[in-house]
Image (tube, rainbow, N blue to C red):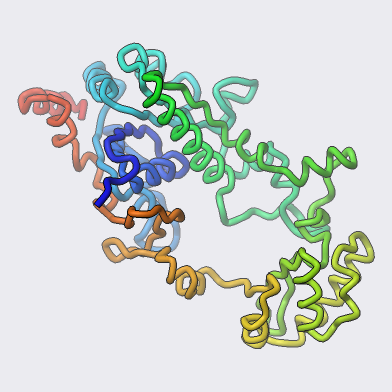
Length: 387
């Protein structure tokens, strides 16, 4: 069997909560040796994050296949340990506010001086420079500054808060992965690493393509719920059924719209797919009147047989059991907890859970021994509470 794509890559992960740990989860699933470095106090706050849903929290879902080392970087001994590990690492990921790692003595300049091939990624809300660099923030704040939050929601309503952390996950996780993997490829070829500065606000902003199109063409973004893909077109929207459920209509292409109109018995609507404004609203109301005549189950039976981009809006527990997602192996159970498997399927790379999410400091001794620390040195570090 071939080795995993990132086998041999060592990652030191200083991040906490959601964005950084999800990025390092992907690296770990791809075979990297991810060492989760937590302080000797609270460690990763996500360990004790209360979801309100019982005993399971998201720490368990995003920290599999990693090892854990507890390390006090406020002690010189802790910094010395980190730098010894960094000398042989490929990637470091951190998510402190700008300048913190430099004050601790473990920033990019310090590490690259002993390990020129290091890829050092910093994930922050606003980036390493600019007037907001020092500000605190969460996902909703990044969406607000990027202009995206103002675009999410229905016509005439207030901005909607998505139960999907767009800034954290698109920005802090996936955008960071693009930069890290590109820099790893370059470092392997050139022997020189890079500093990867990821701003979650930048990442969201850089993907707001349709609002930008509106500004370029009209001089301003369209109001919430009125752009082509947010409710402005009748052929692309969400329609209620008789029992309070919904169907997603994505019949953007003429052939799909025409087939939809035939299926619901409204061939007269065929010329109306791309109407906007008051006329588009009138056609949406016509479609609403049709969809509300049948139940969710009835429409599901109808459109299962018709390929026109009209699909049920599933509740999440229904998605977990969905036949397509099940066939793709998208859900796995680890220690009795359901989790997502990687969303990419790579040839000759079967998904494997090598380790569940680690206990804090679970692998400290193993990691230090591998780095050449003697039993006496490890005992000394522990007595000083540096680990």
